[in-house]
Length: 67
Image (cartoon, rainbow, N blue to C red):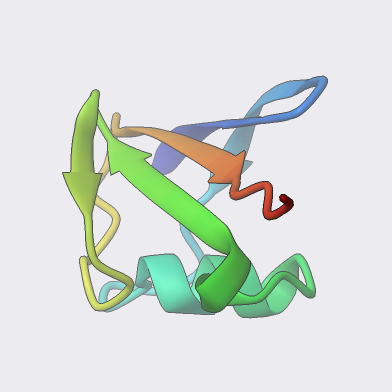
C-alpha cells in the first residue's frame, strides 16, 4: 500500500507503514509541525487525524506568516 507525497520539490511515492497511518504521523516522520502546515488529501483540505489510504495523493503546504 502506498500514497503520493507532494511537498515543496518532493513528488514521490511512499509506502504506508501501517493501517492507521495518519497525516499527523506523516508530519511527525518529516519533522514538520501541524501548526505550520495545511494538508490536502486528494485535493480536499483535511485535519491531522485523517487516515492515509492506499492510492491517496497527500499535498503538504507550508503556511507563511508575516506582516
